[in-house]
Length: 135
Image (cartoon, rainbow, N blue to C red; front, side, top):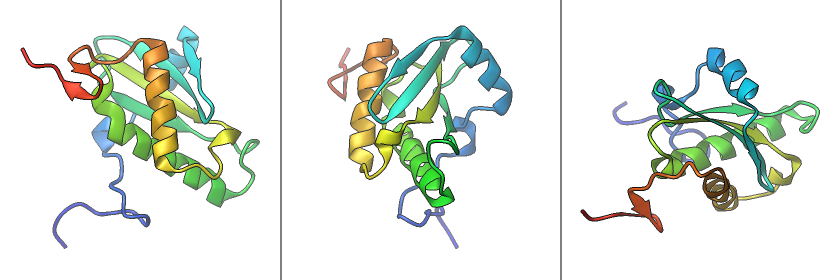
């Protein structure tokens, strides 16, 4: 079997180098810099060891069924994968699913995530309106 392995809904999985190590979670939460959206909460850190990586957290209290937790994780990972090019290169984020993510499509979550990027002021300056700036 050649090429990337697709998950059940036809989307590419978030590659390992773009996933945040569990050892970094405590440091990001300690900085207490978060931005709220309708479908997610985004915790942000900047640093020299950061590299456009994401960690995803979905609470059992918010989503009782495992199928709902897994769908929320898939949506957050896919939205991040499609919009990570808009992040500044020295940023790592943790995405926490909120109850509002239930029943949403990837485009809705991606829109909410990009709005959170803008509010947190972590977008890459080389992109304007989603297009690379010509030098």
